[in-house]
Image (cartoon, rainbow, N blue to C red):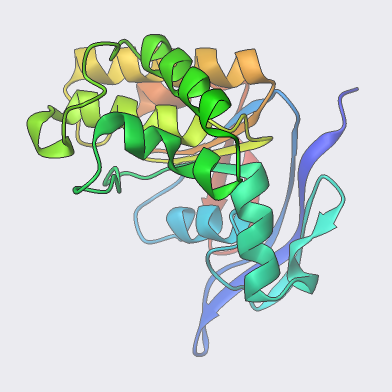
Length: 223
């Protein structure tokens, strides 16, 4: 069996005396696509942020391919995230003052990849997401679907072992949403990345190898 890319044990997140979730245990294998579903307000995005080391948690552990995130300080988590995580945000989070190619190149630049290799990888990612002719455009010149494809290309540019997506189709029409999911899944499979998707969309969740339902008292497989 493929080794776990992420192992979560006994994870809990609280706000004051109230638990957002607790007792969360699950694994995601390398190359596996897992969708996390559940009602609004149960902490799905918070859980995803914990997996990325962007948010803190109050109990439990997260092991990402041998790295215990709960033992790292903020600086070490940022370095780990830069190297190993691709995050597709619901709000895209592209940088408005950079063009499409520069946005995609950002994680490669942060990792110190040489310019020639960086340009080659950006060109390949632009082709992969169908934006070959739009590399010099600014984000304000793109549609929502195009912006989401930029976000996916940026998240995948450095070939991360862990790909996290927070409602990547939430702001898109059904046809564009389907194309974005096709792209996200295909690119994750090609890179052997563990893909964890948070979604309210039954169509998006149905694409996953497994679905997990998050509640305040834990997480369980959906039949």
